[in-house]
Length: 328
Image (tube, rainbow, N blue to C red; front, top):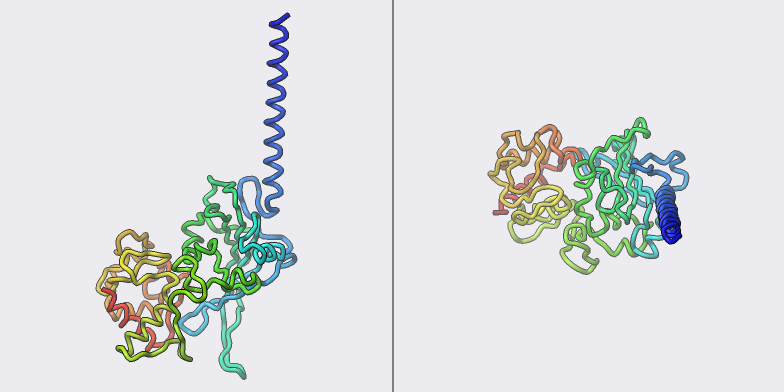
């Protein structure tokens, strides 16, 4: 009789445990299903079917190119995510950020030459994940899911690994949860407290750190070696989102300390593209000027050329190179 009772107790305990495990698994599946309607059980992100319905514009970027503006980036978020950030200074679990990249074209207007986004180049979608739900999926990490979509068919997700396809452009904004929040006024004061310097230095407030006072040409001349001084300020304005002037301090791009006379793709401890590493180019003043004039064409296939077309003005290119020559 005692053995029979023990068997019944053990059998009952097994049923209870199995039922609890099944309930827990079901609850977790339910939680993941409600996490985001854009994300399936494997972490695959889909583009929102009814976009732009349910989203608001939070800010835009104009990316400089050799002829003025190369691209415009238009960024959207859901109203509830914007409201949460305005209250807390953080993006909630499941928040969605969408960026459309458009090729910019320009022409003369009554106000002068103007540029606008015309032809779609690509779409990016980010989904906030505070729990690290998909550790085995290469498109999830650092608190977000990352996706890039074909501009002609938004059902086609074309990113393969967030670290190589997406994160490089966000490294300067690590202190801001990888989002350049200071460029999005809709996010309120908690976003606008950051500055462009925060991207490099980890969250400076408006009254801290270096400030560049620009003239109408975008650079301020000083009494010390005018071309070098101009180049330094242009470097701070144009280059420091990706490059450092400090030895071995790499960011999205390699440190440019000691770049003059260095073989392209040879700075220690930086992972270069094959195109740059195999180019055989030596960074002489002339080659640096050529690269700044046409970052895509001078060394075809290099990563910098994907995001930055170059510096349009001859005097500005010369000034930047003059400053780079002092970094030794």
